[in-house]
Structures are given as structure tokens and as C-alpha cells.
Image (cartoon, rainbow, N blue to C red; front, side):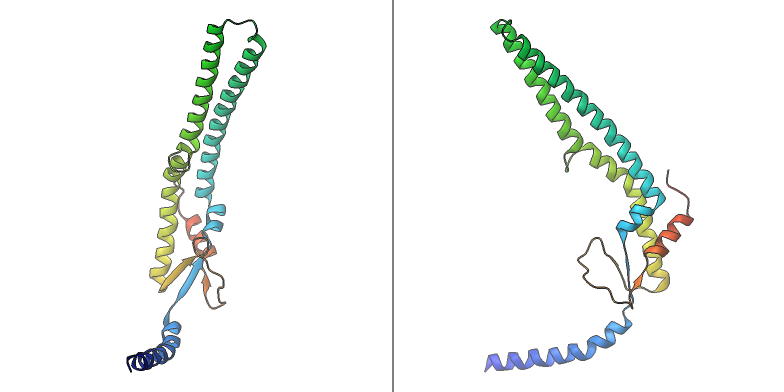
Length: 182
């Protein structure tokens, strides 16, 4: 008897939800933005990306220099190994090993996804831009009465109705009106 009562309650709740949902959905104002498009076209975001690219090029050049020094040291060791005493061989091997470890440490310091300097710098430089973008989106939501504004890049949105507003271009226009972040 408990199962039948539970089934009846579930049926009644389902009917209530089906009846109430269309009215609720019509009152809900939803919009969406393409944050990747905003970041790919907004001037301040592009300036940040250029700065990050410059830093990356510097790190890449440092890494290539270290790799080249390591390669030269290894070639030098190989060409002289027959002429070197055991003590000198061990010194050269230790020097090669130390340089290889410094190269590996350099790569970790600069490019580790959790602690790398390049990622920290990107987050530091991009945060003011993201704050400004979020502020503009929030203003749209407040001023125009949006209940929900979704970001197509961060969610698994598989379909967007023609009745849902794409605010991307309007957000970009508003962002480009303001002054640039320095």
C-alpha cells in the first residue's frame, strides 16, 4: 500500500510541474554570450594575449639556449671522452647532469600548469579584463531584466532557441566604448 501511495503522490507532483512549468518558463528571460569570441576580439584581451606571447617567446628563447648549451656540452664530452681521465669524465658527466636538471627545473618553473610563471602571469594580467567583461554582462542582466545569462564556452549547451538573446555583440560594443585597461 505504501508504494501505491508514493506512486500517486509522484503522479500528482508531475502533473503540477507540467502545468506550472510552461508559465514559469515564459516569465524567465534568458540570454547567452560567447566568452571565447569576446576574448578573441576584445582589444584589452588581445593586448593581454600579446603580452603573454612576448613573455612566452622570452621563456622559449631561454629554454632553447639552455638546450643548445646542453647539446654542445654532450658533444664535447663525447668527442673528448677517450682522452679524459676518469676524474675529468666524472666532472663532465656531473656538469651535463646538472645542466639537464637546471633545464628541467626551468621548464617546470615556467610551464607547469599549476605553478608555472606563464600561467600565473596570464591570470594576473587577464583578471582585470575578465572583471570588466563580467561587470558589463551583469549590467545587461540588471538593466534589461535577464534572469539568466549563460556562457556557451563554459557549459554544455547543446541547443539555444531563437527566442534566447545572444548578447555577445552587445557586450563587445559596450566593452569597446570604455577606456582600455593599462
